[in-house]
Length: 122
View 1 (cartoon, rainbow, N blue to C red):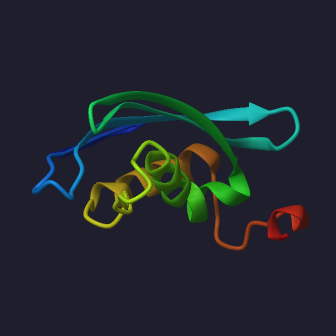
View 2: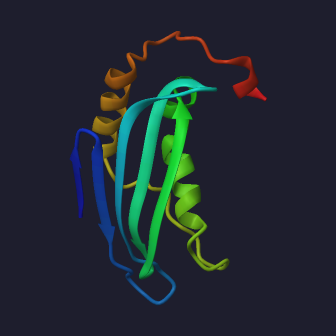
View 3: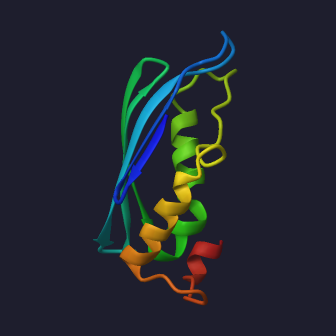
């Protein structure tokens, strides 16, 4: 099950076998300003992964949020699994992230050709 509304995504997955994993995650996000990085998106990912409660917050600056938010969220989710388990990429099965992507573009007024901070390329 997956649901989207601006500023919030809820995804739930039930393990299909003993080698698989279950999760019930909410990803909330809002435009914010970091004193060092400037405008960006503040994320809060909370819920359960394999029955373990998680509550993780992270900020991504405007020039990094769109190419990176699903990768960062997937890596954070992976950290809650046993080393032999691999967390699926959050974005792969969910078209609702297209709506989330567009919502973030609007919240930050992202346009094609916006500059990237050189230090983010290192």
